[in-house]
Length: 157
Image (cartoon, rainbow, N blue to C red; front, top):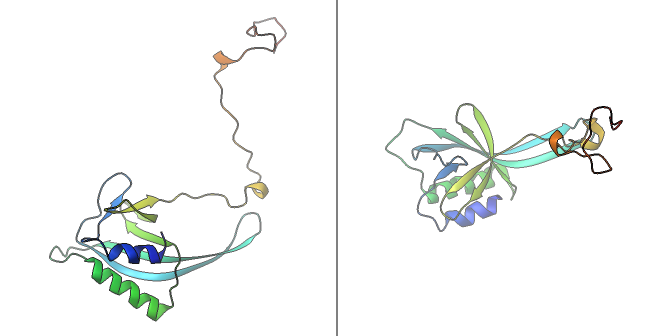
């Protein structure tokens, strides 16, 4: 989800609710402790130099049960970060501590913001040397070219 999308959604929802993919909710007394612009300059294992730019939201569970972040307040924080930090309309990445700090993509299901699990991946598969995964078959389903199963002493092996 891009920053422009969340800004549009925040204008039409009554509450800001974040939900994990396993259907658990981030406690309603969470705080957005940071909004930032994260620039990642790196080199992949194939030697290609890459640059990634994201808008980062950090969610934090506070022991502050009296307050709940309202859409207008989050919209104000976003606008302030755009103005002060020069944040543009980039993809949002959310940091949230469950068992450990995780990074999530963000989607909206019409009611809640969904924290989508991110996975690592090789960006240079052609240069990495990792072989493509072979198709797995059950030995009981294999047959020889003649249509007969491979029998001991038949010469098929």
